Image (tube, rainbow, N blue to C red; front, side):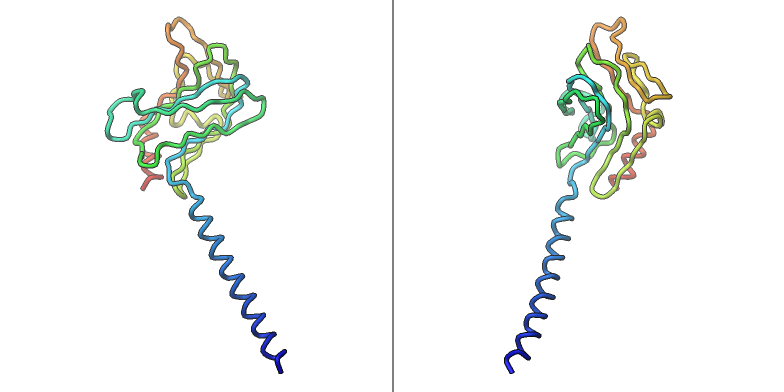
Length: 177
């Protein structure tokens, strides 16, 4: 007689526990979604360097040092993600990328550029970078290989950058709304 009650009780316990576990997994998944506006560059950068992102967020009209973030990049011959996580309360209206301060940096291969905010994202693969960015004069760009080669040229300050075209603002607006 006891076995008639034990089997349904065990079955009920197993179903209840597995449903509860599933709910916990879903909660964790939603918590793992980034609450920040993130920019990810997938690149091959062969030498150590420091990259910088500048952003305009409504409190500033031009790119300035106070509204920027630095990320250290470890040199590698393998592709790597270089991730800029803007502060949690910052939603940019525009961004600019400075690709290093190592004046001896060799050619860098740009595989992709991605912006993401919560579950929305926008991505450009290799040669499509020209859709939203102007290559600064201290970078030589090879479209066929998506390679950026820094050159100081005649400039007194080394500043290889990707400057936004006006349509980048539109892409940012699409993912933050």
